[in-house]
Image (cartoon, rainbow, N blue to C red; front, side, top):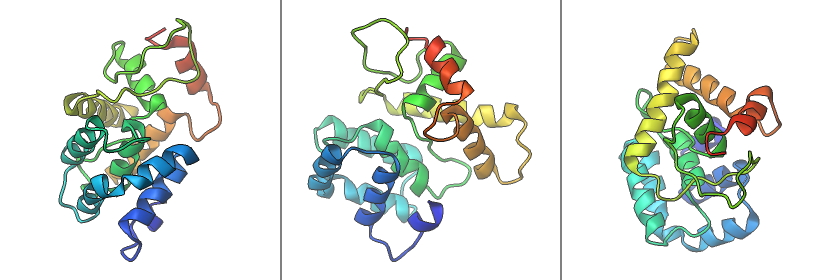
Length: 191
């Protein structure tokens, strides 16, 4: 995926829609976000041109989202843009989707990442990252992933690869179920 998103000749819009598709965005939400492209595409351009840090990009996406200018796209999706388009190797943002957010909350034994409250109080397979997660919450989340990279003992000298390995473990390696994902579902701190 990184080879494709790093291709200079691909347009910001094409790269964005590719990332959304990679992330599993529904067709309905893809149509909504595509129709509001003028509101958020400059942020993508800024990321691709190394003009924004991950927190600056998050703050800009958050502002657009809270103003209703990114329909169909919440933090779980615009952090995918941040993760894949950030060029700062030592300070990068991570994908704050339900699996990484729930994992970090579980490991921290508190709610760092906010989720929409569910009507049924039981472990659920599906939770949605709340649109009101602040830049401070996102930064704390990203720092928690970085700290896990340090304590996990990953030995690759490229910190970006180490972080991706930790992130993939928290995601439970792909779309399928894994032991960690099952553990997160069973032990969700919001249950």
